[in-house]
Image (tube, rainbow, N blue to C red; front, side, top):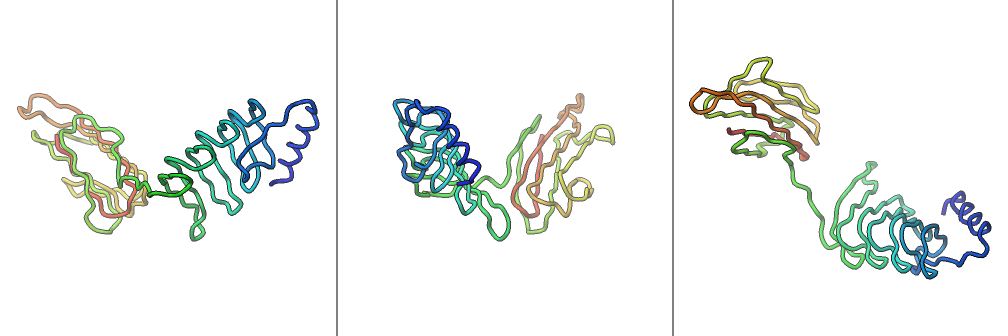
Length: 222
Protein backbone atom coordinates (compact mmCIF):
# COMPACT_ATOMS: atom_id res chain seq x y z
CA UNK A 1 0.00 0.00 0.00
CA UNK A 2 1.27 3.47 -0.81
CA UNK A 3 2.30 5.39 2.38
CA UNK A 4 0.24 8.47 1.48
CA UNK A 5 -2.92 6.37 1.09
CA UNK A 6 -2.27 4.67 4.42
CA UNK A 7 -1.85 8.06 6.10
CA UNK A 8 -5.14 9.30 4.60
CA UNK A 9 -6.95 6.25 5.89
CA UNK A 10 -5.45 6.69 9.39
CA UNK A 11 -6.39 10.38 9.51
CA UNK A 12 -9.94 9.60 8.40
CA UNK A 13 -10.21 7.05 11.16
CA UNK A 14 -8.88 9.46 13.80
CA UNK A 15 -11.25 12.22 12.70
CA UNK A 16 -14.33 10.08 13.27
CA UNK A 17 -13.74 7.94 16.39
CA UNK A 18 -17.43 7.34 17.00
CA UNK A 19 -18.14 6.04 13.51
CA UNK A 20 -18.87 2.32 13.23
CA UNK A 21 -16.03 0.54 11.36
CA UNK A 22 -16.87 -0.51 7.83
CA UNK A 23 -15.58 -3.92 6.80
CA UNK A 24 -14.61 -5.50 3.51
CA UNK A 25 -15.17 -9.25 3.80
CA UNK A 26 -12.77 -10.22 1.03
CA UNK A 27 -9.46 -11.11 2.78
CA UNK A 28 -7.35 -9.71 -0.08
CA UNK A 29 -8.88 -6.24 0.48
CA UNK A 30 -9.39 -6.04 4.24
CA UNK A 31 -6.55 -3.64 5.14
CA UNK A 32 -8.15 -0.22 4.52
CA UNK A 33 -11.54 0.85 3.16
CA UNK A 34 -12.78 4.33 2.24
CA UNK A 35 -16.31 4.71 0.93
CA UNK A 36 -19.97 4.12 1.53
CA UNK A 37 -21.12 1.80 4.27
CA UNK A 38 -24.29 -0.03 5.29
CA UNK A 39 -24.77 -2.14 8.42
CA UNK A 40 -21.03 -2.12 9.04
CA UNK A 41 -20.15 -3.45 5.59
CA UNK A 42 -18.78 -1.79 2.45
CA UNK A 43 -21.81 -1.02 0.33
CA UNK A 44 -21.88 1.34 -2.66
CA UNK A 45 -18.94 3.13 -4.22
CA UNK A 46 -15.61 2.85 -2.44
CA UNK A 47 -11.91 2.00 -2.41
CA UNK A 48 -10.16 -0.84 -0.63
CA UNK A 49 -6.51 -1.83 -0.15
CA UNK A 50 -4.86 -5.09 0.73
CA UNK A 51 -2.97 -7.45 -1.57
CA UNK A 52 -4.21 -5.15 -4.36
CA UNK A 53 -6.10 -1.86 -4.73
CA UNK A 54 -9.77 -1.92 -5.76
CA UNK A 55 -11.94 1.02 -6.83
CA UNK A 56 -15.59 0.51 -7.65
CA UNK A 57 -18.85 -0.85 -6.34
CA UNK A 58 -19.39 -2.96 -3.24
CA UNK A 59 -22.39 -4.97 -2.06
CA UNK A 60 -22.55 -6.46 1.44
CA UNK A 61 -18.79 -6.18 1.95
CA UNK A 62 -17.67 -7.58 -1.39
CA UNK A 63 -16.65 -6.04 -4.73
CA UNK A 64 -19.79 -6.47 -6.78
CA UNK A 65 -20.68 -4.73 -10.06
CA UNK A 66 -18.22 -2.67 -12.06
CA UNK A 67 -14.77 -2.05 -10.64
CA UNK A 68 -11.06 -1.67 -11.22
CA UNK A 69 -8.29 -3.69 -9.59
CA UNK A 70 -4.63 -2.64 -9.62
CA UNK A 71 -2.19 -5.40 -8.70
CA UNK A 72 1.34 -5.11 -7.34
CA UNK A 73 2.96 -6.37 -10.56
CA UNK A 74 1.36 -3.51 -12.52
CA UNK A 75 -1.48 -5.57 -13.99
CA UNK A 76 -4.86 -3.81 -14.11
CA UNK A 77 -8.30 -5.40 -14.39
CA UNK A 78 -11.33 -3.30 -15.37
CA UNK A 79 -14.67 -5.03 -15.57
CA UNK A 80 -17.42 -6.83 -13.72
CA UNK A 81 -17.32 -8.48 -10.31
CA UNK A 82 -19.63 -10.80 -8.43
CA UNK A 83 -19.21 -11.28 -4.68
CA UNK A 84 -15.48 -10.55 -4.80
CA UNK A 85 -14.71 -12.52 -7.95
CA UNK A 86 -14.16 -11.41 -11.53
CA UNK A 87 -17.28 -12.43 -13.41
CA UNK A 88 -18.45 -11.63 -16.94
CA UNK A 89 -16.58 -9.35 -19.30
CA UNK A 90 -13.38 -7.64 -18.24
CA UNK A 91 -10.27 -6.01 -19.67
CA UNK A 92 -6.74 -6.88 -18.52
CA UNK A 93 -3.89 -4.44 -19.08
CA UNK A 94 -0.29 -5.48 -18.44
CA UNK A 95 3.24 -5.05 -19.74
CA UNK A 96 4.28 -7.50 -22.43
CA UNK A 97 7.72 -7.29 -24.07
CA UNK A 98 8.17 -3.74 -22.83
CA UNK A 99 4.77 -2.59 -24.08
CA UNK A 100 1.45 -2.10 -22.36
CA UNK A 101 -0.94 -4.68 -23.81
CA UNK A 102 -4.70 -4.95 -23.45
CA UNK A 103 -6.93 -8.00 -23.83
CA UNK A 104 -10.60 -8.62 -23.12
CA UNK A 105 -11.78 -11.86 -21.53
CA UNK A 106 -14.93 -13.55 -20.31
CA UNK A 107 -14.59 -14.61 -16.68
CA UNK A 108 -16.41 -17.08 -14.46
CA UNK A 109 -15.69 -17.47 -10.75
CA UNK A 110 -12.43 -15.47 -11.07
CA UNK A 111 -11.18 -17.73 -13.90
CA UNK A 112 -10.70 -16.83 -17.57
CA UNK A 113 -13.08 -18.78 -19.80
CA UNK A 114 -12.15 -17.33 -23.19
CA UNK A 115 -10.60 -14.31 -24.86
CA UNK A 116 -12.92 -11.87 -26.60
CA UNK A 117 -11.22 -11.17 -29.93
CA UNK A 118 -12.30 -7.87 -31.50
CA UNK A 119 -13.32 -7.91 -35.18
CA UNK A 120 -10.51 -6.93 -37.62
CA UNK A 121 -12.52 -3.93 -38.79
CA UNK A 122 -15.64 -1.95 -37.97
CA UNK A 123 -17.77 0.39 -40.05
CA UNK A 124 -18.24 3.73 -38.31
CA UNK A 125 -20.53 5.43 -40.85
CA UNK A 126 -21.97 4.47 -44.20
CA UNK A 127 -24.35 6.43 -46.38
CA UNK A 128 -25.91 5.32 -49.68
CA UNK A 129 -23.80 2.15 -49.71
CA UNK A 130 -25.83 -0.78 -51.04
CA UNK A 131 -23.10 -3.40 -50.64
CA UNK A 132 -19.77 -3.37 -48.85
CA UNK A 133 -16.99 -5.95 -49.04
CA UNK A 134 -13.91 -5.66 -46.83
CA UNK A 135 -11.14 -8.27 -46.98
CA UNK A 136 -7.42 -8.75 -46.47
CA UNK A 137 -5.25 -9.78 -49.40
CA UNK A 138 -1.58 -10.10 -48.46
CA UNK A 139 0.65 -8.84 -45.69
CA UNK A 140 1.73 -5.42 -47.02
CA UNK A 141 0.45 -2.46 -45.04
CA UNK A 142 -1.95 -0.94 -47.56
CA UNK A 143 -5.59 0.15 -47.44
CA UNK A 144 -7.42 0.43 -50.77
CA UNK A 145 -10.83 1.98 -51.40
CA UNK A 146 -12.49 0.72 -54.56
CA UNK A 147 -15.73 2.63 -55.37
CA UNK A 148 -18.02 0.96 -57.89
CA UNK A 149 -21.23 2.71 -58.91
CA UNK A 150 -23.91 1.43 -61.26
CA UNK A 151 -24.19 4.79 -62.97
CA UNK A 152 -20.49 5.62 -62.72
CA UNK A 153 -18.60 7.85 -60.33
CA UNK A 154 -19.12 11.58 -60.78
CA UNK A 155 -16.30 13.16 -58.86
CA UNK A 156 -13.80 15.97 -59.07
CA UNK A 157 -11.46 17.70 -56.63
CA UNK A 158 -14.41 19.34 -54.87
CA UNK A 159 -16.59 16.24 -54.64
CA UNK A 160 -14.05 13.47 -53.99
CA UNK A 161 -12.54 13.33 -50.50
CA UNK A 162 -10.23 10.68 -49.07
CA UNK A 163 -8.82 10.77 -45.54
CA UNK A 164 -6.62 8.42 -43.56
CA UNK A 165 -5.06 8.37 -40.11
CA UNK A 166 -1.65 7.26 -41.40
CA UNK A 167 0.31 6.38 -44.53
CA UNK A 168 0.92 8.11 -47.85
CA UNK A 169 -2.00 8.65 -50.22
CA UNK A 170 -1.83 6.76 -53.54
CA UNK A 171 -4.09 6.85 -56.58
CA UNK A 172 -4.40 4.05 -59.11
CA UNK A 173 -7.79 4.89 -60.57
CA UNK A 174 -10.27 3.28 -59.98
CA UNK A 175 -8.58 2.38 -56.67
CA UNK A 176 -7.55 4.96 -54.09
CA UNK A 177 -5.80 4.40 -50.82
CA UNK A 178 -2.78 4.59 -48.54
CA UNK A 179 0.56 2.82 -48.35
CA UNK A 180 2.89 2.34 -45.35
CA UNK A 181 -0.15 2.34 -43.09
CA UNK A 182 0.13 2.02 -39.32
CA UNK A 183 -2.67 0.08 -37.68
CA UNK A 184 -5.19 0.65 -36.23
CA UNK A 185 -6.16 2.76 -39.22
CA UNK A 186 -9.14 5.09 -39.58
CA UNK A 187 -10.15 6.20 -43.04
CA UNK A 188 -13.04 7.67 -44.96
CA UNK A 189 -14.08 8.13 -48.56
CA UNK A 190 -16.71 10.57 -49.80
CA UNK A 191 -17.77 11.09 -53.41
CA UNK A 192 -20.77 11.65 -55.67
CA UNK A 193 -22.30 9.11 -58.03
CA UNK A 194 -25.10 8.96 -60.57
CA UNK A 195 -28.25 6.92 -60.24
CA UNK A 196 -28.91 4.20 -62.84
CA UNK A 197 -30.72 6.61 -65.17
CA UNK A 198 -27.93 9.20 -64.76
CA UNK A 199 -30.47 11.87 -63.88
CA UNK A 200 -29.49 12.53 -60.27
CA UNK A 201 -26.27 12.60 -58.29
CA UNK A 202 -26.11 11.49 -54.67
CA UNK A 203 -23.35 11.44 -52.08
CA UNK A 204 -21.59 8.27 -50.94
CA UNK A 205 -19.86 8.24 -47.55
CA UNK A 206 -17.96 5.47 -45.80
CA UNK A 207 -15.93 5.71 -42.59
CA UNK A 208 -14.10 2.60 -41.42
CA UNK A 209 -11.57 1.53 -38.79
CA UNK A 210 -9.22 -1.40 -39.46
CA UNK A 211 -7.29 -2.86 -36.52
CA UNK A 212 -5.27 -5.74 -37.98
CA UNK A 213 -2.21 -5.19 -40.22
CA UNK A 214 -2.29 -6.30 -43.84
CA UNK A 215 -3.20 -5.31 -47.38
CA UNK A 216 -6.87 -4.37 -47.10
CA UNK A 217 -9.38 -3.96 -49.92
CA UNK A 218 -12.57 -1.98 -49.29
CA UNK A 219 -15.05 -2.45 -52.13
CA UNK A 220 -18.01 -0.05 -52.16
CA UNK A 221 -21.06 -0.71 -54.30
CA UNK A 222 -23.93 1.74 -54.66
